[in-house]
Length: 190
Ligand SMILES: [Zn+2]
Picture 1 (spheres, rainbow, N blue to C red):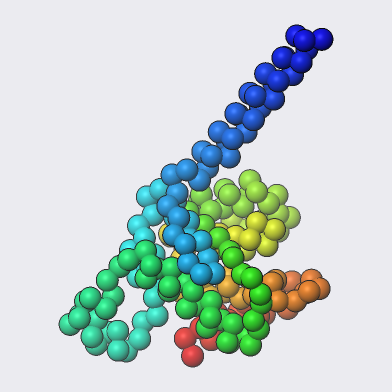
Picture 2 (picture 1 turned 180 degrees about the vertical axis):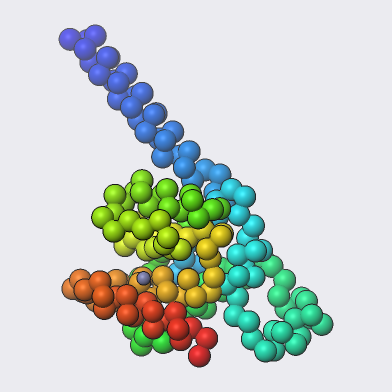
């Protein structure tokens, strides 16, 4: 009886150890940047400055003064998080929908191939499409994209999905969600 118990404990120990190791290995090398609405997760090899440049609003003022006063567009982790947060607030306004308690991950892979591979692994999604530039999966509260795919419009689109998923109590048909996401994408810089 005693032996059986210790064998059982041993199994539990190894199982826990093994599971923890697996869970840990995926995200351990990722860089996390915390904002108000998002935790931005950058895969190893993803340059945060590059992401910042690609999602920033390109305003006329920025164009004129950006060169003269480069300090205004200097990179910091806080500036990157703030840029995602500003986009969220703007999409809320565009859609006139204000969901409560939004805390979403944005996982940014290095390549499009890795992004597609992840979708295959996690979703087993019936409509898996290797061409997707990004996707939002509500049960994981995560937007997925890659360095090769990211842009301001891509993120605005996915924030549109986040908001339409989180705002309604009842599940909204996919076509309606898609329309809202496209609307957000088109009007992000109005
Ligand atoms: Zn969409």
